[in-house]
View 1 (cartoon, each protein chain N blue to C red):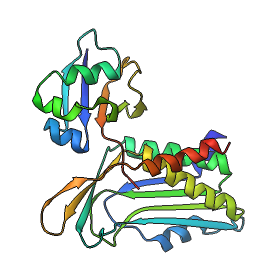
View 2: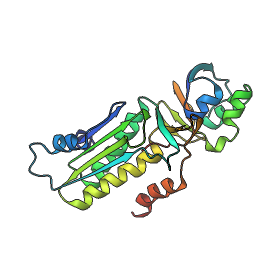
View 3: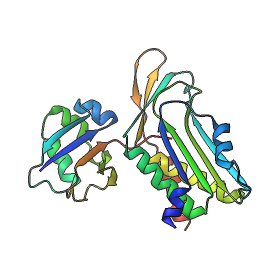
View 4: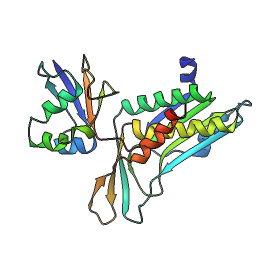
Length: 85
Length: 160
């Protein structure tokens, strides 16, 4: 299954791109499994995702916990804790 | 009720500045039933003269959706007559406006609570990130999230 990944703030800077399309391996079923999978793709991903606990995620623009199934989400966002306001 | 609450919500994500007085006037124009308007404006600090600017990055689409959801909940929870939230993105110099919240209600407590509730949830749930640009030209850091902001949000659940 192909999904669009979007990255923000220092996650975007460390990975070196704002978005990409990837094919999800069948064993990747949750947000947490996706983060663990991405961290194996290269140094830049490892640098961005080395502390998985601080990474926040959204599935199709809705906040999602790490144990949440990705399901049929088309856009998955990964980013640091938010600092708006 | 959710539909009715949604009609009382106005959310804008924009790069350009806003005019608080004009927004209050627009929200209350022609209304004789509003008894209280509370506004909150968040501004860019210079952090003791260190900062040249803050750069606000956001997740387009989700930023508006997240703030709209919080604002709609605020309307329902505090029976607000109207609520407006404007959040800017892009580079903002010290002294410049970042965020505006205007909450209207028949009485003051609901207006105070509605504005505070929206800001507390916005700080931790709206997808915006601040990067510092330093006056000495150096590359700034991303602003870290604060535990105090999580605590501020938590008071709305523990109070119930």
